[in-house]
Length: 385
Image 1 (cartoon, rainbow, N blue to C red):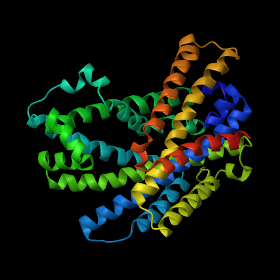
Image 2: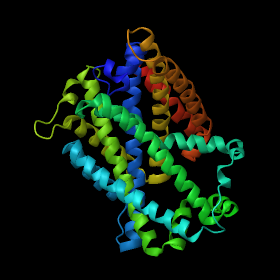
Image 3: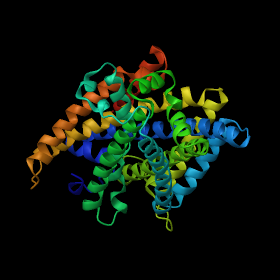
Image 4: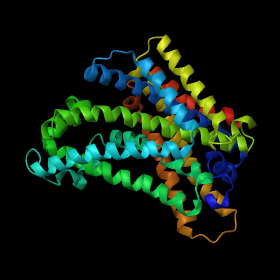
């Protein structure tokens, strides 16, 4: 659909042209809210893990908010310096993070796991086992961000070819890699042992396997790479937010100054200033009230963002279907009818599942959960109104 719409970088563009401008403006408000919620919440995780890792490995004892503030500043700098510089940083971190997991996988496979290698975990019966709904709710949250490939359309040399390829790769390659690593970590403990370890302390599962099969040095390296992976996510979402804001400002849905491009770096630098200021304000507020950076800043702020993006993905799928029902085109029925309708129905189910299992994402009580869920339609209605 992107080649039929000039500024395809925003949910606003798709949904407004498919479902009407009020829905598009509601989507615009929800997208800005959701992406910012995810990015700002991640500053809590970055500050938490950076502080803990630095203290354990070097003895440097700084509060989490100091690390979060440093992360905000560095993310702003690379976002200001253009997407090309940020892409090199993200590419390098991705290689390092993938490499350490590949090293763990190789060590487990070479040693044959805990009790020999088995494909029993892929048995179809496990698909309908208890708790699968909870797993799927978390999985949909893990894939948030693949839709952002369209945001870079105006900066790509051949967008009609590269954007679809990048989107398919952003879903397919991580999905296959996640499945492979999940199978490997089961082999590290055995089918029964893996369930016991994951139930008791899932956070240390990979660290335990790394120490057992590779060594303590690799575990320390993995801890560092967790921090760098969070930084990579912060930078990626910052770039997505600033370009989304630029797209909306270019179409008049946000103040025009937010659509200014830096004359040298070609980055949407005014939007970058705005996003950085918002992140600093929220992080400072949580720090001032002595909130927990992980259980509150990360989990509470992230969750409505995850719900909002899945809702927007579902609305976009339905908008694509309706757009092509009203527009002359030469595309196949599979691309304009079957795929968008199937995606819309499945993503609607995913949004409902995440709301149903929201306690897994927030670790909070009903009052907090209902407030977070309610913020999503409230923001959409505000934008549409």
